Length: 237
Image (cartoon, rainbow, N blue to C red; front, side, top):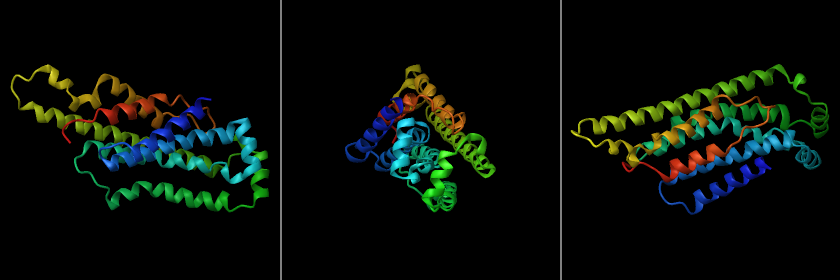
């Protein structure tokens, strides 16, 4: 039930961002794309490990299995680009940013060749006899690479936020007799104690997520982070 609610909230908020929300369009689209990955990941878990969803997927198409797991390769780079679009003035995507999605493209090609293009009977036989112990070594290595990439992107996200925080401090450092309340102005809301706890939740989500075969964690703090960051943008833009 929690996973279904997670999917509903993510999809609803993503639609709101691309249709009704005003402000930076690029930030809206990147956050919407990130939220869609957060909807795809619970769906992947439901299909692979949910008894009711698994039976429906087996009857409909074996291609549904593992396909939504491609979102694992997208969420971290999307989050990094969203943070950059949020904290940098007039930020635009560059061609070099496409390199962040190279691992996704490479894995998608591998996934298409090793799963999607297989005969349905072969897929069904593999699914009915699937077990963690029988996972190929290549898939285990790819899983480690994926989690390492997500860890790396998470570190980059925190570095960007740290640089932004230092920039804010430098901008107010030359002022004399600065009221301490200014440090708590909207310019610093992204780094308030509450938002830091949510950033820790994001780092936990990116860094310490259980293996693909484990139950997912409660995703609500990540939605709250997105809402708070989106609604309390610094006034320097």
